[in-house]
Structure formats: C-alpha cells, structure tokens
Amino acid sequence: MPGRKQDWWLGGTVALLWAITCGAEEPATNRLTQLQEQVVQAQTLLAASTNDAERAHWQERLGLLEQDRKNIENRLALDAKEQSLAERQSRQADARLREMLRAISTDVNAPSNELSRIDFGLRQLKAQRSDLEKKRRDPAAATPANAEQMADLEQQLRVADEEIAARFLEREVAEARAHLVNEASRMDEALHSAELNPTVTIRLLREQQAHRNQALKGRQDLEELIALNRQRREGLAAALALAQEKMAHLEVEEALLNRRSSGLRSLFRSVPMLFSGNVEKKYLLKRMPFQQQQLAAMDEIIGLNTKLRDLLDCEGTCLREENAALRARFEQRLVWPGGILAALLTIYLLFGRLLVPRLLAKDHPIVGRRVTGYLCSFTALVALVVFFFEDLRSVATILGIASAAVVIALQDMCSAFAGWFVIMSGHKFAVGHRVEIDGQRGDVIDIQLLRTTLIEIDNWLGVDEPTGRIIVVPNSFVFRSKFFNYTYLHPYIWSKLDITVTYETPAGEAEALFRRVLEEETLEEFTAARAAAKTVEHRYGVADATYQPKLYVYIADSGVQFRLVYCAHYRKVGATRNRINTRVIREFEANPRLQFAYPTERHIPTPEKGGLHVALDRST
Image (cartoon, rainbow, N blue to C red; front, side, top):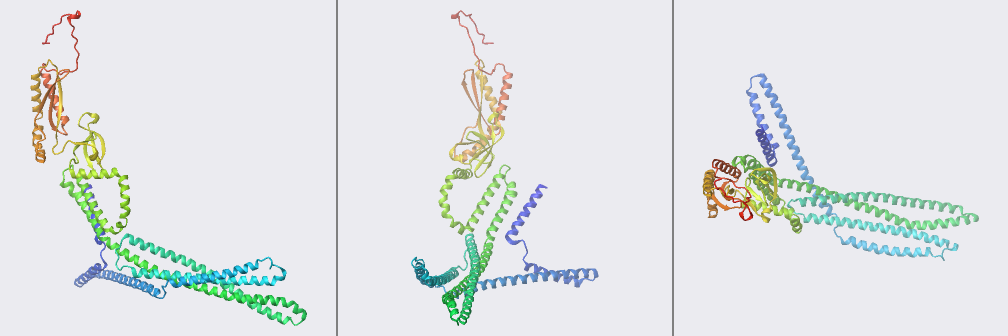
C-alpha cells in the first residue's frame, strides 16, 4: 500500500506539473470540434436505430449535445466580442488621450510669463493698499472733522481688497493653467518616448503600478480641489448677488429720498443719507467688477481643473490597460521558466525517488538523491537568474557593495559551503566511510552543503562499536584541521595486540606460538587485504604496505612483550582482536610453561645483612 500511495502521489504530481506547463483545461475550440463529431456520431446512430427506446435515447443524447454545442458557441462569441471590445476601448483610450493633448497648448513658457506679470501687478496693488492703510491709521486724520475722509478711506481699502482678491484668483488661474500645461507636456513626452514592445520585468511592472497609483492619487486630490473651489464659487456668487441686491436697494432708497426732499426741513434730513448712499453706491460700483472678475476666475479655475481631471482619467485608463497588457505578456513569459521548473521537478522525482534507489547500492541513494536535488536546484536557479536578469542587474551594484559585508558576516557558512565542494570533488571520503575528525571517530551517514553527520564510534566503550550519539561537523574542517579516513581506496587497516610473558617463559616457544596463531587467525583478512591493496598501487604507483603478519619483541619491566601486528576490516577490528585473544588464552591454558606477566615485586635477602642463604629452584 505505501508503494501504491507513493506512485499515485508521483503520478498526481506529474499530472499537475503537466497541467501547469501545458494547460490542463481543454481549449473551447477543441471541445467544440469534439462536440460536432459526437453530434454526427449520434445522428448516425439515431438513423441506424430501429428500436423505439434506442431512438428515444439517441434523440435525447443528440438534444443534449446540441445544447452543449450552442453553449460553447455562445461562449466563444462572447469571448470574441469581449476581446474586440477591449482592443477597441484600448485604442479609443489611447486616441482620446492624444486628441485631448493636441487640444492643449504645451508651451510651458506662456504660463510662467503670465505669472510674472500678475505677480508684478500684485506687488503694486499691495503697495497702494499699504499707503491707504497708513493714511487710515494716521492719528492726525482721526478727528471728527475728517470723519467723511476716514469713511472714504475705508471704502477705498475695501475696493483695494476686492481688487487684490481678484488678482490672487487670476494668479490661481495662471497656476492651474501652468499645472495643466505641465501635466499635458509630461503625458505627451511619455507617449512619444514609450517603447513599442518593452521587455516586461518586475521592475517595469512595479514602476507602471506606481505611476498608476500616483495618477489615481493626483486625480483624487484634484477632485477634492474641484469640490472646494465649487464651495468657494458659491460664496463668491452669494457675495456678488448680495452686492447687486444692495445696489438695487440703494437706488430705491435714493429715489425715495429725492421725493421726500421737497421741503426745507426734509432736505436737511435727507441730504446726509443721500450723501452716504451715494458714497456707498460709488464704491460698490467699483467693487462689483472685481467681484465679477473673481467669479469668472473661479469658473475658469474649475474648468481648468475639470479638464485636468478628465485628462488624468484618460491617462489612468491608458495606464490600466497598459498594465493589463504588460501583466499578460509577463504571464506568457512565465511559461518557459515554469515549464523548466516543472521539468526539473519531474526529473528529480523520477531519478531521485524511483531510479536512484534501484540503480545505486544501498549506502548511496541518499547521496544520489541529494546530488540530483542540488543539480536540479542549481539549474532552476540559473533559469530564474536568466529570466529575471534585467531585474537583478538593477541590484547588482548594491549586491556588489554588500558582498564584502555578507562574506565577512557569513564567512563560516561560506567556508563550510566551499568545504562541501572540496569534499565532493576530492572524493576523499563518502557516506559509509569511517573517519576521524578533530579526534572524533565515526561513520559518515550524511554529507550536506554545510555540515557532515557521523555516528560516533568507540569513545567510552573501548570497542569499535557505535555509541548511539550523532556528531555534526561543519564542512570547513577540510581547511583547518586534519582528518583520517579508515576506508579510503580499500577498507583494511592495521592494528596491534601487545602480550607480555614472564621472564621464566621460554621466549622462543612463545614467539613460535604467537606467529602460528597470528597467521592462522588472520589468513582471510590478509588475503583480502593483498587483493584490495592493488587499488592503491594502481592509483599512486607504489604499494602502501607489505600485507603479512608481523611480530615484534620488546624487553619490558615485568617480562618479555610481544607485539602482534595484524590487518583487519575496519568494521571487524574488534572481532579480529577478540578472536586472537581467545586463541592465545586457550594455547596458554594448554601449556603451563607459558605464563602471562603482570607487575610484581621480589624481595631477595642478602647474606651481608645477616640473612639466610637462599637457593632458588628455577624449576618451580
């Protein structure tokens, strides 16, 4: 069941990748063709049927196929209309924007000259108003006799304020016109400098999206400004209407006062009111044209802002359609890197999960899968770099500046990564080899990009058996320390066994026994080692050793020491030693003349000190 489940998962993954690469959904046109063929087949079967039930079945089947065919035809027709409409709208938006730009003057110097002229006039008006303000604030003029003159100054100040306000609005008109001209010039330049078929990159998509967002924000700000200007216009229109109403009221009041001034007494009462009304009417007539100018300027400002808003709307439509087209092209470009990634993933699943375990020995599938994964990952990285080359080129300078800091900060990681290349290219050890690194001995079970994993051997056990602990060593050890491989080229290593016998033991007899035991117990090991040693001689041209048992004799403190040097498989060193020890013990038990030595002390009294004469019996 697990195998079937794995095969099902693998088949589903491959099908999914194929769907991503080539498109799992059948095109509507192919489906329509199939439906037409099925309709013809159903009609043929209906004509050939003689049974009423079969004819009813095929008739119903034919009706369903016809309905399905009509649905697909309607869908294709709607898709074609939608595509045609989108293309037509795209062309219309572009053409509309160009037409709107042709209707706008792109001379940016004219608004600047107009602003300079208005600013010069404003400075003169402000200077005149400042002179009037000084006269009004003069303490010498603030007397009851000069009340009429002070009132006249107040009216003149109000007229000056209205004129200055009109000039400020005229300046706003010039600024709005300059803004419109600048925006139109920018859009016109963008249209003329735009590439016909630019290379679609993520950077270009982000720039286009940022441009569109900026246009949307400018449009929203402009909409708020138009709403504010409309409120200001309502206020100006209300002020002008109030002035006109007041003017009409003063005319009516003047007519009434003229009719009532027939008598002498009435004349003295109406003259001050007539004078005051005439003065107010005089300056009101002076203020009203400036208020009308303000209202006209505000209308022009609203018109210019509305035109700019329409221009931004058209630009936003063009940008939206351009972004959609760029995204569609970018998605089309994603097909080949997506296909490469899907193919690499399929290769990894086929080779790493299915073929590698069947082709390689049992201690190599992990390495094979990992190497396959590394190769596929590297190829995928190259494909992505080629695809995103334009985007990566823009950050190449930043990466170059930051590379030194990255190397310093990640020097251990970089050193470990470089060590992995040395390990994999040098082939000095592999998974399953027994090595010693920094005094730690173990069997290699995994070699990754940054670290090597071992199963610890020996340590506190005192025998060549796993302790159960895992050792993780960074791959940078190949540059900073020595390491030993017990299995390089062939798996046979040398070992020794020290046996000490007493001085009373016949040395020749013990030596002959040890040679015989050593030769008999290690015969198979030395035979296999001699055959394996040919690999070293073939690789380096010299033999690494003479593979035969060796026996060395030493005079030790407690007796005669014999060193038995033998060869064994690196995984069977302990077993071979145990076998030799067992054989030697049995031989010593069978021969009482052979005695193991151990540290002893002998006290022999001498006659010079009054001791007894002692004769040693060597037979005991």
